[in-house]
Image 1 (cartoon, one colour):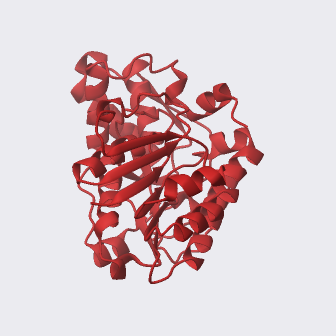
Image 2: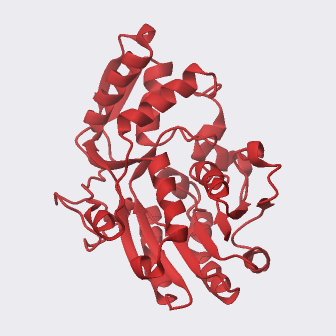
Image 3: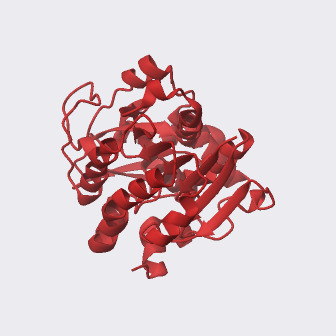
Length: 335
């Protein structure tokens, strides 16, 4: 049994990851600002192995306290996605970049033995390559991408026999979570199809890699236990299906029509976009080194979301700010 500190553990990915870690038998300490609701992990609140700490990763005294007794850190906390970052660049940089090295240093000093960092595949920016590997140059188009990438060499400097570091560059994540985000590409398109019966595609030709939320969280759970020789100082892409935005729209329309036939016909409209990010990520390295292969498709994610809509698990999906990072951060008045 490990004690695992999950920063951002009440977020979109954390809400799926933390229960999986508990089921694996670990103790979990969550550090989160809880901007998106206090009860994300309420189903597990009575589990004595779960400790929830409301706090800011910029608070170094707090970091020293919560790192004590931990074996592993899974670092998810950040101001996620480009619009959220641009809402307040100074605030975002302070959380995503300035707080990163103190967190790593404090974790190592506290005796943490393993640090898993969730970077992003958007560090690649724009690439015409059909196989964007981990060695591909980082060409970030935004400050969010830039600072996520700049944290990577910082972490690798701390790599040592006593402190195993590993970096994951996930594709765009999709699928249902108790702390749902409806501002990610597949989730956006599904929400529009279900609740407006009209999908709006911005651009369409941009290629984007995708990964199901259950696949990426399964990977993080495995990384806690994998032999250090396999992952120490390594960077891994983690993606599954690469599709254009236009193709994603058609996939969503097909699945939603099959799952919720009363909504047909669902229209698809294409408009111009200034979001030029386009890249085709390969995950050959992680399959070769770790034997990791995602099991779930984009269509599975859309089906999961349709099931959640049908079951009433996503109330007020077009208006509730908890589903939209920019709106929730604005309302929080975070400084």
